[in-house]
Image (cartoon, rainbow, N blue to C red; front, side, top):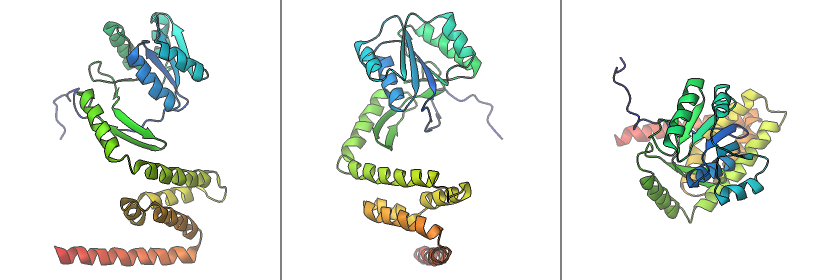
Length: 260
């Protein structure tokens, strides 16, 4: 039985990884907050339009570097913008203007239209609250306080980054290598969709890969991945591997029972 009590807007935000590459995003405001959000959106591949009467010089510079994916529309928000949101011409709306009332109206329009909204805190009641993130290639580490304390988010993410500073390059190199193998699997015609799904599941749930990366032995992890790809298309080797996995599982179960 579910509770009839409403969920507080301060809690229970669901952490997700959102695909925004190539998708249209509208940002209101041309100041520092808008700049921060635009930098992240561009970095993740979005097509961004920023609407504001004035733009920070950094936004103008960003426009020069990313002219194909960044439009700066120099004017106040208008009914035309709300009509475009209502027509669902944007995947995401980011209210970052200094005018709070304008931001709230933007969120209301998007909500009625069923368009996602996002901001750096919970005060506007957006669908998405941006947390603090460290990004190195395919490696992303995020910290969120549900938008309650961005200062704590920054402190924690800086601490995590400091703790991992000596290892993060190894993580990134491993991920880049792993990503290249996955890309080849996706375009290799001898793999059908079922094959790719099964291989990806093997990667995702491999105890061997987990143990190798836990020890920081990325070369071993890469070798395990190569071996899994090879054995997947060699029935005899795959059968032996499955038998070995079954034997290891039985041994681990007996060991666990003996220690209880």
